[in-house]
Amino acid sequence: MRGMSEPAQNFGNHLLIALPSLHDPHFERSVTLICQHDADGAMGVMVNRPSDYTVGEVLQQMGITSADADLQAQVVLSGGPVHPERGFVLHEGERAWDSSLSIGDGLYLTTSRDVLEAMARGEGPQQAVVALGCAGWGAGQLEQELVDDSWLLVPNRRDVLFQLPLAQRWQAAAGSIGIDLLNHASHSGHA
Image 1 (cartoon, rainbow, N blue to C red):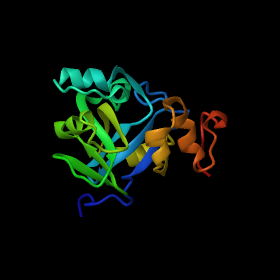
Image 2 (image 1 turned 60 degrees about the vertical axis):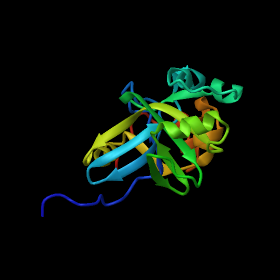
Image 3 (image 1 turned 90 degrees about the horizontal axis):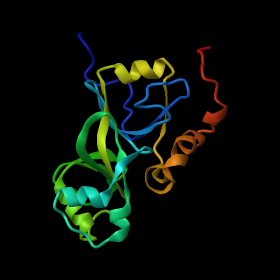
Image 4 (image 1 turned 135 degrees about the vertical axis):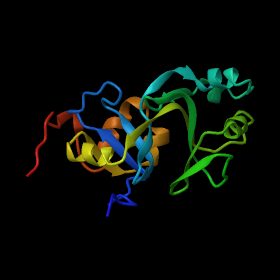
């Protein structure tokens, strides 16, 4: 039998936390929500890195107007090094938008303009973050990086996605399973 149709464990709707030993500048001290994971690989969005843009600037570039000052001031996240020009909206809600991927537990990732237009009108999801770019892994790559102790995988937490200040998300995500990353050895081994 060549390959597997499904990975042994599906990491979708989990937070992937970069361990202190990971020195890749794209992912150092990052927290990534895994949005999709299958035999072909994994895709996620980093949720703790600010970009140089605000939602207001992105809306303006798209020709969308909004009177919502809080929305306009919201920082757009740097979602990852893949497709950095492409917008992703990570949100809660019952409503499905034109191109929404269900992550699980009422969370969605949407790449279509209609969700941003609804947000600009004040009719969008209650909880949402906008990101430019995403992170991707080829078949088996993420599983190998987990074995290599580059990452810590933890259950998803809504406060990490939507409420906590960006600077607190890395430590808080690991703290959800009792790990203090600031005191974590830079190298960990296998027993």
